[in-house]
Length: 359
Ligand SMILES: C=C(CC[C@@H](C)[C@H]1CC[C@H]2C3=CC[C@H]4[C@H](C)[C@@H](O)CC[C@]4(C)[C@H]3CC[C@]12C)C(C)C
Ligand SMILES: C[S@@+](CC[C@H](N)C(=O)[O-])C[C@H]1O[C@@H](n2cnc3c(N)ncnc32)[C@H](O)[C@@H]1O
Image (cartoon, rainbow, N blue to C red; front, top):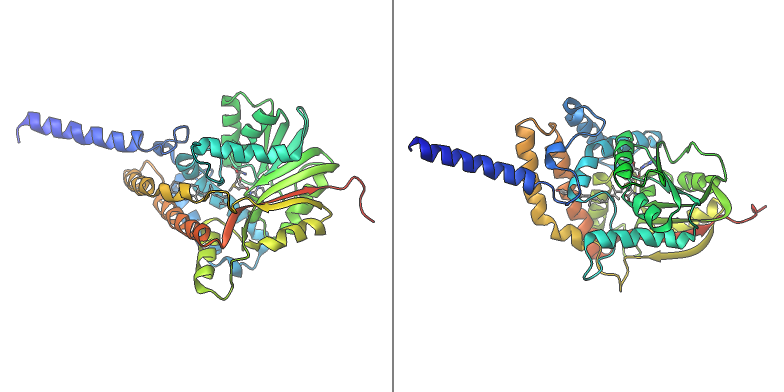
């Protein structure tokens, strides 16, 4: 090969790698770039160890003995996955029913706006987002309702990301983010005019504790809406496939045991709420929420190759490949959960804190 051919081949290979990583890399247009993948607040050299610790804690979620340790491991989980989620999914870390003819972005926004519409809050009122992630829902909700949203997340890396996004979106005057545990919130009682949680309270070892905290911090007469991850009436404990799918979802999503759909209203009542409405938003005529996961399969393979290359050349932390592989498998379990109908990530419950405390 003469030097011109060699030069052209090298240029082509370099261009190909650049295109693969930098052009194809960002799966979501406004998400993170593959080149920026990190372990959140965990330093690069500790990512692999933290992944191993997470994996040994959550491998058998039903056998988790010390509930007190769950929030710490959930925090580790979000250090490991936050950048990958943003890169491959966007700034809203939840599912939405498919809406024919609408983009993923619009489907996501509509699902978020529905939550705040149910709360019936007025512009300027204060609402709480319990488990806010990097704030995708918070920004859509603040822009739509003009209410002031305070988000809380256990993960300080997400707080940094959310604040950055709020500023970039020009919504930092309507959106606040604090780092804390939603099982013991740093807010006075009767602070908020409403509250919502989107696919977040499933991380609480005891649902009663987080519902009681939300009940405490919202004003009498105000509403709380939650989109819950639950097993449906189709789930059977004695069916091996059902058990395998649900365990797969739990261990790949840092869940200390999924709850049954019937536990949700019971728990809300127990802490003092009145139930206004309860509905599985995934039920027909809603179109499958898991179709976005299925459609993405080709992109996941490409992402896998990108992550392997970036880890090998030392740009992404070692351990990123393991985390990505775990998510890859989780996507499959979630799809199976949706297709069999044994699992839903959008069991909606709308509750009211009574005007007067019951005797
Ligand atoms: C509510 C929770 C998170 C729900 C979803 C936002 C995430 C659940 C599974 C995630 C993903 C799976 C596959 C990844 C893929 C392999 C990668 O290349 C790009 C990112 C994924 C698509 C990733 C994105 C976020 C999820 C869909 C839980 C944790 C309670
Ligand atoms: C799947 S994400 C959903 C984020 C956001 N609601 C959204 O839809 O984009 C779950 C969120 O719950 C938060 N979370 C989990 N356990 C928590 C806890 N004990 N205290 C506070 N936040 C918690 C996580 O940090 C994460 O931000």
